[in-house]
Image (cartoon, rainbow, N blue to C red; front, side, top):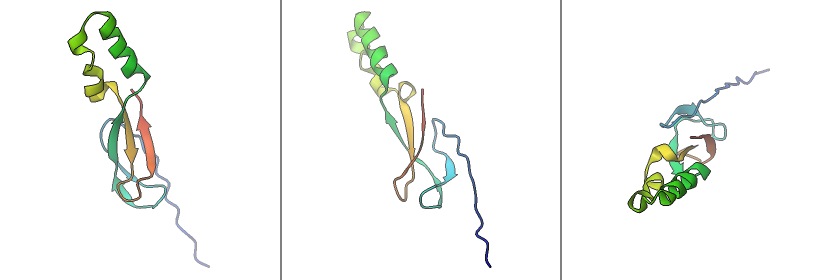
Length: 85
């Protein structure tokens, strides 16, 4: 009887693409990343508006450091993880 080998990889997702094994398609991949706005992004923009920094109010939406990083598999597009700021 053949035994199936199971490989368990715990991925720590960070702000950069990570090399992991996709839990859906079991391929060794480097994740695709996408930056998404979060509540903190909106709060930073609101605070800049309240401080009368109108030209700078869109800065939190342009800076990757103010947004979450979502990791996905480039082959099957399944969700791998998220790095929250």
